Image (tube, rainbow, N blue to C red):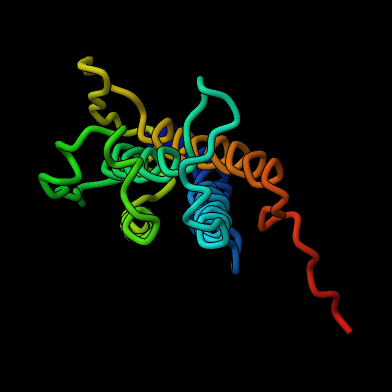
Length: 192
């Protein structure tokens, strides 16, 4: 029996050593990668919306597409949908924000839309602090469009990152159609 225990220990020790991050390595590299991408997109989107004149918030390239104002309110809604699933912290939204039709919210003044969007970004940053790599496989309950299903928490982080990227691309195209450069197309300062 002692030989069997010794053999198991001899096999388990190298595995446990490999599972530990090397000295100086990040404890949650997957979560850190999501955090970096998500916060960069928050910054890009905030800069884009800040730079678009309020008169352009009703712009949409074709009748079938969303207005810039609609994109702003839609992103705020989606941020709460995704980020409420990152951990136990939940954000209760005001009745005005949760019961007003999206088409009405899309016509709110720019300063109101951008403030609500930035509040949703700040909330998402707080909820990202709850996420660890070891919790990415945890099942969370998602209700969307009247349907409820269980998904891995990783799906919510990936969904959030992709949603931000999708809408930044959309907004960047709208900006270019209005002769504006999106934040990621602006010249970057060169180091001396």
